[in-house]
Amino acid sequence: MQPYNKPPLTYSQQVALLKSRGLVIADSAAAEAYLSRINYYRFSAYCLPFEAVRHQFKPAATFDDLKALYEFDR
Image (cartoon, rainbow, N blue to C red; front, top):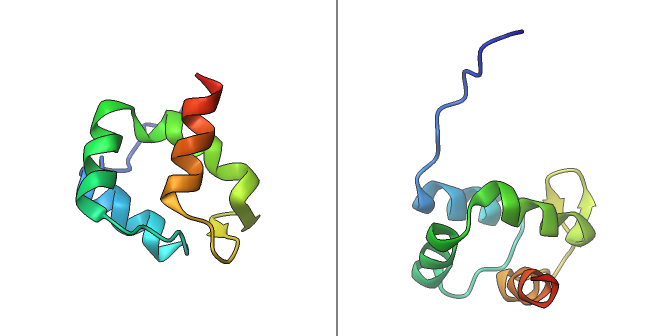
């Protein structure tokens, strides 16, 4: 088994990563606060229906859309 070599991302870096993949985030500070309450790994599972291809979001996909889906499923 290989060791896991990826460094952890800060909440700010997680938000930047989502934005770089095309996710529309209106309020970065609110998104960071939300990701601090749940973890990125759990949240990322709800990204899948909004991805056009792996790690690229469909046009107009928003953080609020993902958040609503996550909260609906809780």
